[in-house]
Length: 327
Image (cartoon, rainbow, N blue to C red; front, side, top):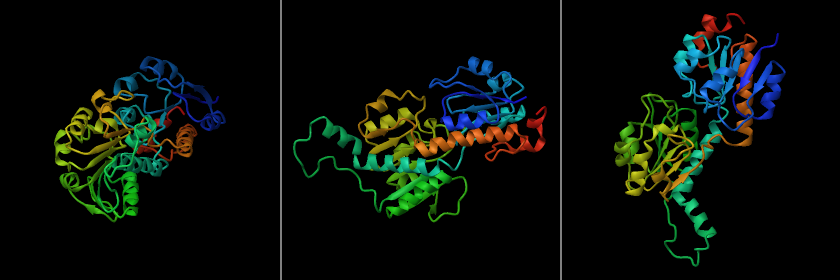
C-alpha cells in the first residue's frame, strides 16, 4: 500500500507531481494556512507532512499528531515553526531546505540595503506622484554604499553571501557570531558591529535567545547615519523600537523583509518613510521557490522510502531508528 502525504499549502506543481509518483497526496492547494484542528484532522493516516513556515507545530500540536506521521518536511531554511525537541521525542524526522535560497536571500538583503541607502522607494513614489518638477542639488540625497562599513550579525551561509556582495562594493566587513568562521572579514563583538557599521544586516536564526536581538539598546548604539537590514525572522527585531528609532532619527533608515506578526506590520513602522518594507520575499525567485518545493518533496520521499533525508535536522532520531518503526 502506498503511503499518504499531506501537503499543507500551495507549492510548485512539479513538487506535487513528484510526490504523486511515490505516494498518495492530500493537497491543500490553498493560500490559506490550515488551522491547528484542520491540520490534525488532515494528518490522520498520513506518513509525511510537507509544511510551510505558516504551519505551527508547537509541542501541544505534535502531542496530538497521528502516530502515523514519520516526517515533517518544511519548505524553508528556518524551522522555528516546529518544536524540534518535541518532534524528536515523538520519533518524527524534521527536514528543511537550506543552501538553495542562500544567494537569492542575500540578493534581497543587499537590494534592501541599497534601496534604503539611496532612497529608491521614496524616489519612485516621488516620480509617480507627479511631484518632481525640477532637479536640485539635494533632492532625495542618500548614503553611499561603496567603501562604507558593513556589519553582519550572524555569519552563516546567508550572512557570508551578503558579506561577499559587500566586498564587491569595496566595503569593510565586520561580523559577529557565536564563533569566528573562516571568512575574510573581521570578527568582533556585537557592540562594535553596531557602533562602527554604516549598514547592519541581521542573519541570526530565531531562538528564545535571539527574540528582540535588536531592540532599543542596540538601535541607540548604532550611528545616526546607519541603516538596519533584516531578512532573518521578524521577532529578531523589536518592531516598536525600530519604528521609534526611525521616527526619532536614532538611525537613518531600514530595509525589512520579515515582521513580528506577519502579515501584520506595526502601524508606526508603516508610517516611516525611511523604512523600505518587503513582503517576506527573501527567497522569492521562481527558480529558488521551485527548488525549495522540490527539495521538501524529496526529503519527504526519502524518509518514506527508508532513506536518510539529505536535509535532516534531528539526526539522532534517524540513528535511533525511531522514525522507521512500522515503516
